[in-house]
Image 1 (spheres, one colour):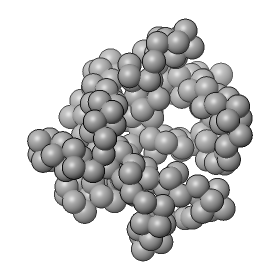
Image 2 (cartoon, one colour; image 1 turned 90 degrees about the horizontal axis):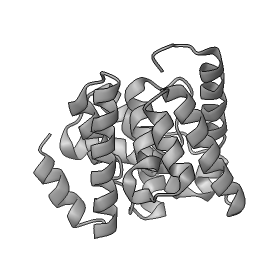
Image 3 (tube, helix red, strand yellow; image 1 turned 90 degrees about the vertical axis):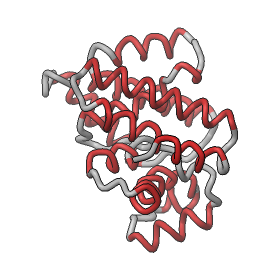
Image 4 (spheres, one colour; image 1 turned 180 degrees about the vertical axis):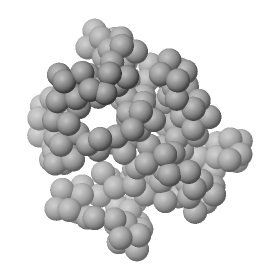
Length: 196
């Protein structure tokens, strides 16, 4: 994958503030990958590619999802923006030739998460919410610290953080976010697997 080509493609399709976020996710994903002995190149690629479809229009997101056989549940139908993660994985595959299943999963899972995510998906999921550009609140700083101590606990607590925001702003909540939260809450409490 040609990083410069990806950045050129992104610069013509997303605002500069989003480029800054994407580079923040790429950097934090690399740092977490090094910390947890995960392939740093895969983490960098997934971080760089995670928001390719972020600014696609709702109709285009729905159309691509239908064509690819992605499940469009009632929450996604009402909020097509939630499909941007799955669609970004398709764009990564079709436009940039990415065919590594782990990278594509990490891109597809970065917004809603998924129960049983592997380490790479956990890392990109966390980096998307916790990269430095998201702010310096005590809560975010605490989540960043946990992300370097215990991946499962960090995913669970980051889901809680997102759920609070969604409740406070009266947004629809996707069932997969709740399922992800419950899965990683359980994993953290059971301390299994110990590497997460």
